[in-house]
Length: 290
Length: 196
Image 1 (cartoon, rainbow over the protein chains, first blue to last red):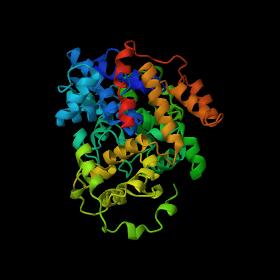
Image 2: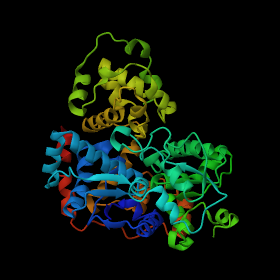
Image 3: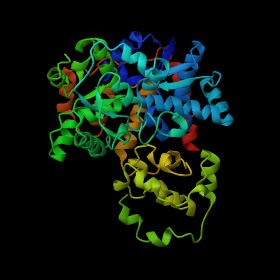
Image 4: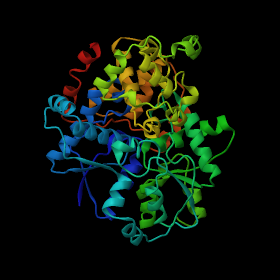
């Protein structure tokens, strides 16, 4: 099957290992990702905080290109991009006035056919948990992870229509199919501070700190994420969080696609596992996984 | 704006005397959000990620809309510190889209030239949109450096930057959109919308 792929700015920048592992894993599972030609930024928090119509139009332009490529299913690995694309699609479908405005602004028909999915959803709905489990060559046993969904993968529920916004389970089930043990914890869908990493760093240190502390208390040895913002905040600010809280967490923050790839038999460098700041390599060696 | 300055007559001003319904009607019309559905349960504030640092929690924001206190709303610190996590709307039994109200108020405050309480948040957002308008995409490395220089924080993330450089996470050459004129078209009416 072919799916329109929206990598987003982060996956072309700091999160290139997420891009690389996502492409490898999808190919392995028989999903052909076709990058949206000449895609542009979804607008992120910056656009929706400053101009509503600009935010919707920036995302709509990308969906319209996907429709021109005859691809109605669109996937975005970044939870932030996924949320913006999905919101644009929701607004266009639910308001004729917005659809008309967007059409004028982007100079193309409003993309009403696009079905936007996040990448966890894409794999679960199009491949299935059992089929993923069958592909496992190296079970990731004896390792306890906390699956962290953050805000934007499931919320707002009326827009995403994906999983449970309070106690989501999809990523847990996907990781369990690789042999991982997933912990029950309180902060699965709490916020890491999102786009405030540079502008109000204290918010990320505060909210991200609560997430890391909850993962530690639940006995997790690593945190699994499906968002480059969550990954960057929890990874690059972990040292600052440790200083403020006086606790050494040393929790690797790993993309779920990297763990899928590892279980399918791909190497550390193919998956970019060596690119994470808080290195997962010691943990993975201790578990006999690399 | 510190909360203490705004809330001297807090309990008095939150009462439903002299209600001006124009803002409530405006929000219903412009955003499709009907705060009449609020049942005053407070679950929005109970869930809010940043309630502990807000001057006005989501429940109070809804109440301020109800009494029409636009001046307080457009100047409040919560406009700068809301992380748009959508916990409030998902916990609301009536699904009142408070993040949409916050975005609407942000846009309105910006239009009216009201100084945000945390200038760095708005500066970061503007610099980011500059990159989108110029290249169609955001170059994270460039954005971070430009933001830190503009705010005089030359060494703020130097140590983190050094580590990221050695992990190959910093990209000197930004990724760009080829048909950039298409993206710039999306921005063409933005100044007009900002001027109202």
